[in-house]
Length: 330
Image (cartoon, rainbow, N blue to C red; front, side, top):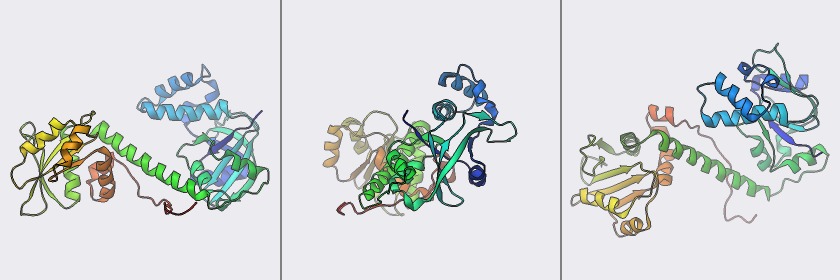
């Protein structure tokens, strides 16, 4: 039977103990013994999880139930587990040697599997792509894309780390950026509608060095926000739409109708613009239009200057990721 390769993470303060005592463990101690959950299906796990963690979101329930079920029932004796440890920056590879068991003596990480550790290698022994896959935010997950590389290491076959791996660096880096943008746009679409999105745009313009004034609700006449770079003209008339569908030419024209001679216009939407709207904008150099993706780009650029209440809702951490010259021959 083909062996699966599982990735595993634990908190840094427990890592050394897991290596010394030959096991892996996960938390969710409030669920108690996972082998006693009936029926022994994902639906059974989901029902209990919702009962115990009643405030959990649907998405988080799906992710966490998947991890729990994999740990108990999908991982088999003989499967391999890859455990990157932060305390010594090593990659530890082991073979699962026991079925799932519940350890009531533990306070937090009560769900366990015995493991025989067979390899302890420096992180530099693996390609950057493999390291990225093992860097998943999940606690217990299946390694798919770079499983052959792990098997080569287990079987003492040489792993070549050459320039071609740079391609995986570029792809993964781009995926990280895309997933971050998707996350921000999702939060905006979910939590910021109507007037709330107007405030986000106003705060963004302030972060960019503009002075802004949000129009009273219901009486803006097409002017959601008025912005100035300084005390002198030109004035910028801003219209913000949080609707899901693409913005039509007629709606964009309403912004132009709200502008006076000498004004500039800014249209902001979380979606995009119809073909006719884009044609209209092409011949209107005094109107700048931002779609959802472009808005997110600006938010990421000026995130540090955004208000704390926004950063509490849209939580981001600044990190550095590797890039390569796209013109470099690979």
